[in-house]
Length: 315
Figure 1 (cartoon, rainbow, N blue to C red):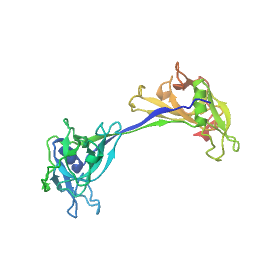
Figure 2 (cartoon, rainbow, N blue to C red):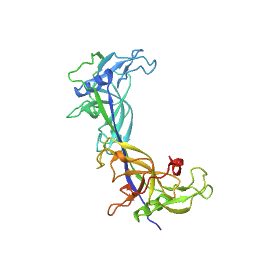
Figure 3 (cartoon, rainbow, N blue to C red):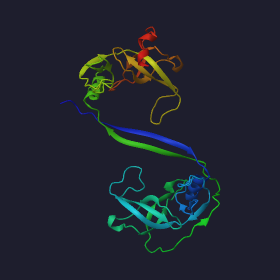
Figure 4 (cartoon, helix red, strand yellow):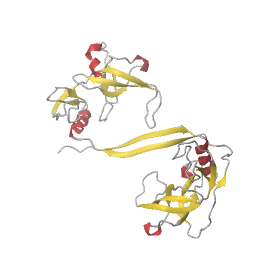
C-alpha cells in the first residue's frame, strides 16, 4: 500500500481596516474599561454598536455608556478550547445582555463546568490586565450572582484621549490536508525529481497537477504521463509584499508554467534571473534543493523563448 500523505496547512490573512467614529469610540472605550452602545432609531441600545441602524439602515451615532454587568440570554459549553480562543481551560460561550443594552454581546464565560452555567445568570466583565483597544480587552465574563445593580444607559460623547483609528484583525484557518490518490502519486513522483500528469481518455489532454478526473469531460484520468521537466512561462506576476514566514526577498516573480507535454499550466516561483527580466515565453526548468520533496523554484534554461502560438491556449 502506498504512503498516505498528510500535511498541516495554514491559511492566514491579517486584515487591516480603518475605524469610523462609532467603532473607534467602542474599541477605545474598551481600552478605558468603558462599554459603549449606540441608540437605534427605535430607541433600542445596540451593543456592540453599529454604524447603521439594523432595521432602517440609517446612520446612527447616538452613543451611550452601558453597564459592565449583565444577564446571560443563552450559552453553549466549549469542552475543548482551541488555539487563540479567550480561555485555555473549558469555558462557556455566552450571549450577555449588558445592563442598559437591548442586544446581547458574545464572549466567553469562565465557569468550572456546564452545571455552573444557566440562562438568566448574572455575570460581569473581567478586564484584561493589558488593554490595547480590542474586543480581547474583555478577557472574559465571570459569574456575579450577588450583583443586582441595574445600570441605565448614560449619554456619552465618544471622545477619548488618543483614540484608535484602525485595527488589524488576524484571520487564520489551521487544517490537515490529505491528497487523493492522483495527487499523492504526483507528490511522490516530485520527491524523485519527476513530474507526472494524467491523460484524459476522451479529449487526450494531460493535466498537471493531476486531478483524478478531466475537468472538461468529467471522466476518470487514470493514465499517467511524465511531463517536463522543462516548460514555458505563459504569464506571471511580480510580488512586492513580503509574506509572513516566507524567507524570500521581494520583489520576486510567480508564474504560470506550461510544462512540456502538459495541457494545463501550473504556478511556481521563478529564480536565477532578475525579476524585471522574466517574460512570457521564457523557457525554464525546475531546481530542487537537497532533501526537498518538490522544486524550490524554476530557472531559465538558456533556450530561445518559445513562440507565442505554442502556449497561447494555456494562458
